[in-house]
Structures are given as structure tokens and as C-alpha cells.
Length: 133
Image 1 (cartoon, rainbow, N blue to C red):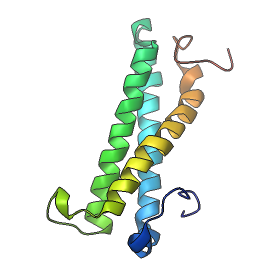
Image 2 (image 1 turned 180 degrees about the horizontal axis):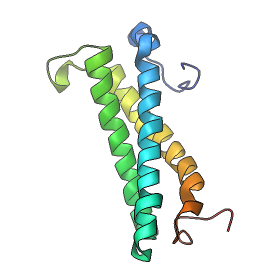
Image 3 (image 1 turned 90 degrees about the vertical axis):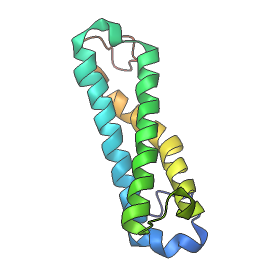
Image 4 (image 1 turned 45 degrees about the vertical axis):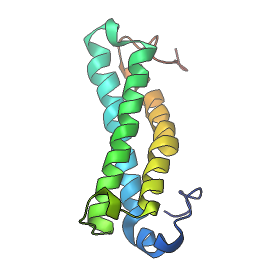
């Protein structure tokens, strides 16, 4: 898992991240991207054409990024690092990993799952691009 997160250098937290931090972050990344893209295309995309806009797609992209950041932070700080003491007790490597996991990898995986789920929506002409149609 550490080769997937090659942009992240955990420094003194490397042993802890190798013990499960990278795996938890990747699982959160995959499940959050699948759930938000599937909800957008399979639920909202089949209700009405009013949801088939670029703006709604970007709203769900930012919702996905927020969920990845939040759950990466909560899972890593509670289960991997066993931190009980508020936000000030969380090490910087957890903050940096959660931000990197949410912004860079979250956007890429949401884009990939959008391409996969795009053709399952009835009103998918306008969101955000359609490669196959």
C-alpha cells in the first residue's frame, strides 16, 4: 500500500502507517468514492433531469472529498494512533495524509467512478462529460 501513496512521506509515523494506516485510508477512499458516485448517478440520476448539471456533479465531488477527509481523520486518529484528546493531539502526519488522501486521490477516484456509473443514469448527457455516448 505504501507504493500507492508515494507522494506522502510520513517521516516519524512511518511504522504506524505501515501497520495499517495506508490500508484504512485506501478503504475509506474507495468506499466513499463508490458510494457518492453511485448515489449521484443511480439515485439522483434516475429521478429527474434537474440533477443532471455540472454544478450538482461538483457538489458531490466536494461532498466526496469532505467525507474522505473526515473519515480518514477519524479512523486513523482513533483506531491506528489511539488518540484521545481533541484535534490538537493529532500528529501532523495524520493531517497531511488525510488532506492528500481527500484532495488528490479522492478527486481522481471520484472521476473514475463517475466514468463507470455515468451510463447507468437516464439523464447522463450533461454530467460532466460522456465518453461513450
